[in-house]
Image (tube, rainbow, N blue to C red; front, side):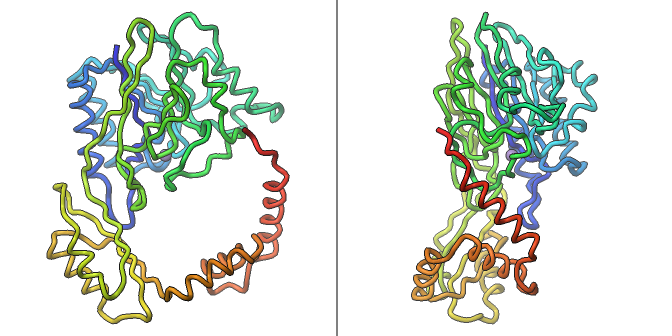
Amino acid sequence: MRILHTSDWHLGKRLFKLDRGPEHELFLEWLLKTLIDQRIDLLLIAGDVFDTPTPPHQSLEHFYNFLHRVSIETKVEVYIIAGNHDSGLLLEAPAKILATHRVKVWGKLSQSVEDHWITFKDIDICAIPFFRSYELLTDGEGDALTAIRKYISREKVRPQLLMLHHLAGIHEAAGSEQVITLSGVDSIPTEDLKTFDYVALGHIHKPQKISAQSYYSGSPIPLRFSESTKKSVMIIEEIDGKLLSETHPIPIFRDFFSVKTDEKNYLEDLNKLTISTNLTPMVEVQIELTQPKAGLIDDLKTILEKKKMELLSYLPIYQTGEKKENRSDKLFKMSPIEIFEEFYSTKFPESNGVPEDLKEDFSKLLEKVKNAHSSP
Ligand SMILES: [Mn+2]
């Protein structure tokens, strides 16, 4: 029995003006082929199918066309949970018709724990979509972690697998995830995941192992220029009651280059870039300048055009090496509130400093952070 675990597709996502649809289509095409080639029985999608609760129609079309092809061209079953970016109601709306195509969706946390458990062949699977604290603690009382434990603990009679869209253990974010403290649980301790033979996690976009059998599959495409880690899905195989997992790499569908350069070296640095994919590579240029330089953007665009690449993001940095040093020295001497004030004035240059109520909220937050006991 073989399972494929993926998450955080973020269909409908844009990066600046760039529509990621073509990459998503290539990913779904690859995934369909992988389900067949790898003889997969069950596909797990651990949340954030879409980038927004009201996804563009084209992304809905990509998603349903994919499910249709899985239904027609394979025998794979599909289990999907909603992530914090998804609308659980939107995902669940076609649940009845999806069920006739071997697709099961958990969009919302049900009051009945049993609704979240299902047996697939020889494995008990617990599927928990992203939840908000008011869904977990319906009377507004009690401890969120204790409440979630009720959902995920069950007497073990066969191998158990958990699918969850949440923070777990100590993880390394890719930077493109939204904070999800709305759930009332900061991070689920790996202690609580120990009884599971595999934990299929969604939410963090960088693929990683959290504990012996808990993995974030990560997003299939980089959602930012800074996400340079190779993307992958997890393939899990059940052999004699044991679940063995391995990382399965996803091809790169489009190159994203982030180039840090200066006015002397940019031509040379851009000329070093080489194309490895069919889709037009996208380039971000961070360039150190002593003063604004007329025609520079056009120059960068022309150089890249000749290389069949596109300038997607341009960040001029007006600092000399000396100034930079002063700045980091200065940062160490500043208090958190001073740093916040400086950040605010760079973000909103037309404002007259941080509004009082916001300052107050920030101080409260700071107090809370200081008083928070550090968890293991
Ligand atoms: Mn996500």
